[in-house]
Structures are given as structure tokens and as C-alpha cells.
Image 1: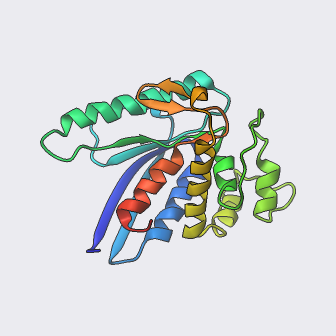
Image 2: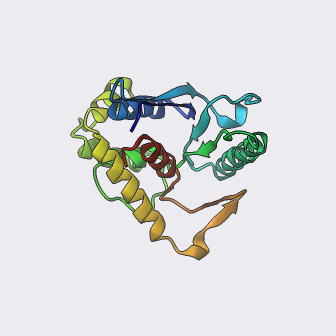
Length: 209
């Protein structure tokens, strides 16, 4: 592959997602041959004014038990994808991906280390398993920057690929009738993702898949 440069602008729910994408960029980087960067901004895709879009975009968000807000976030991403597709008729259109985790990002971290397809109700249901999977202390705050750094240090590019494959397996085992439509997207009950679709696209484009 010739020298490859690609930037994505990512709207992230919080610190976990931002630090994770920065780590993935470092795993992909092979300077000067290949550089992928994620320009991250923390916040809510529903509250961002995105009139001008220069890079391919992704919005990383969780379900967090807020079904209506979750659906609205998917619809917003789909609307922006459709809008920019029309603008890009004479050149390559800017893409806008949703990259959600249902129920939350903790489950996505867990999939880097093991299969996990159990349905849960509470937003903190994965914390104990994440602590065990990454050898953390029993009272470790997995939202703390230092703890997130410890987790990321244990994630390799191969682990990212494994998480993508595990998420694909979870989706493949869903019953078609359980899917719900939001715009052009079909989503399912917990556990479910679209973050794996975005990351797989990133790895395919960079030649890492």
C-alpha cells in the first residue's frame, strides 16, 4: 500500500471512547507509511451543530437505558449520512457513521477479551467482569483515566479484531424478527453494537483487516 493518511472526526460520549480511539490509532500507525487519526470531541451528537463536515464522521454513543434518546441519535446519524451523500454527488461523499454500544461501552471493552452475549438490565452490570478480564482491583473505577490507560495497555490490534468478530457473532445470532428500524438502520436489544461496523471499515480501508 502507498502512503496512507486518513482522519475521522468522532463525537464521543465520554473519556472511555476518546482514549480508546486514540489507542486504536496508535495500533494502526506505521509512520510514515500509514497514519490514521481520530479527531475526537466529547459530547452528544444530538447537541452538535454540524453544518460543515470536512472529514468522515462517527458518533460513539451508548444506549444507557435511554431508549428514545438512543433512537434519536441513530436517526441523526442516518440523516447526516443521507444529507452528505447528496452533497457529494460530484465527488466522494463524506460519511457519517453511528458507532453505538448497547448497553454501554463497558461491554465493548469486555469483548476484546472474551465472548459475552448475556442480556443485562443495569448500566453497571459489566463492571465486575471488566475488572476481572483486565486484572484490575476489585474497587477499580473503570471510568478513571488511569484505569482506562491500564485497560488499553492490554488491548492489541488482534484484540480489536477479536472484539469485532465477537460483535458480528452476537448480531448473527439475533432473530430477524427482533430487529427494530430507525431510519435506514436496524438495531436490536442488548447486547448489540454498530461500533464494530465502523471500526472494521477503518481497518479494511487502512489495510489492517
